[in-house]
Length: 447
Image 1 (cartoon, rainbow, N blue to C red):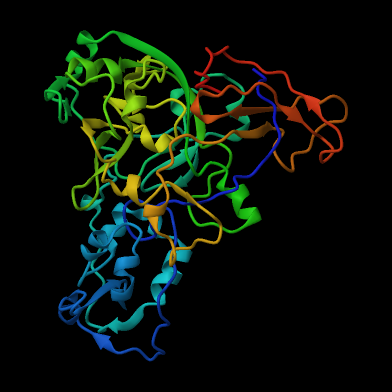
Image 2 (image 1 turned 90 degrees about the vertical axis):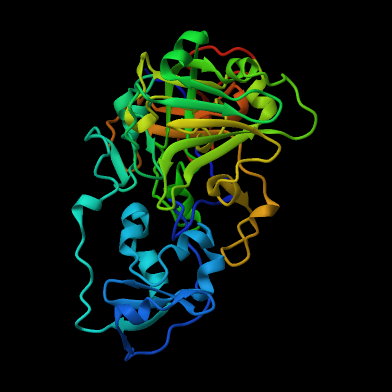
């Protein structure tokens, strides 16, 4: 199906996405000081282990190298507590969980903090395959373009995106921050709690039977979509997403509104309130992935927020949140928490790293040394986005008439009413033919 032809554009904001050390992140940061010059002193693991706090200096090892990261602890985008988990020992067990660290720019940054070498008799610990936190991840379709194996992050081939209105489950882009949890549907429970209501604990069967199934066709997009194109304008750190970190599915499940009203929460609340979500995927400290949305969106009958258990008429795949995930149409995909285990009404937004210290937009002059996350709100709705999926840049095309395909989508349920296409650098334009489902006013959730 040829639908949604478009022009290219770039976000005017620089997204600082995730940390270079912990929290499952994608970002980078700046070193505080230059390393001492070699030759480096040698230390035993016992000596390194004495440096576990800022008072005693925070040392870590990687391979045979020793690093003093004390001055970086408070700068760590993933939170000081995550970095301190590795204090006095090797980074390898933690980088096995946050495998995005195994990139050249992260290792280059780490070496700016080098203070020594391990003694020759102190061999690096042998990797233990049985402790791989990603060993239980599900199989994936070989056609996916992989940006990160651990955690798994991948997108469909761009040329396939515009071939079908609904993206096949196997080719839907995958954005994981942590290992995929193995969930037994027979023992799964969803907790709903907060002030002014009663606590609920729902099994998967109860979620299916107590609440009417509602279906919504919605596009989900990662905030980092098209980062490779951003990098051509200005280098940015993070997963090298092409134009495929976006997909569309027909989601089925219970309305979040119905569940919250059933739990006794009022349709409207005085002041600023939020609905927080926690997933079953956890980091090395046991902290779950979390996010939140405004209370008004969660309770709005027009927002179509789901506790989804179906995707394109099938049960959710493991990579996409089995057995239950949140789907927040028109909002950045980071708020559609997968493997959701807890829904909480709160006067404050989610305390999660991914809500408070990630997925926020800043001006291009802000860097990791100057960023103040409290000055920017958590991203919710995204601006209009568009990309040409066929032909791909640099592709050889035959002479004569050419069909150009692509997608266009906007956050907040705003309908894309026209797409203009230029084949000569903007000297002339053609209006594209739009295809796809006709949305209700204000509820254009899909491309």
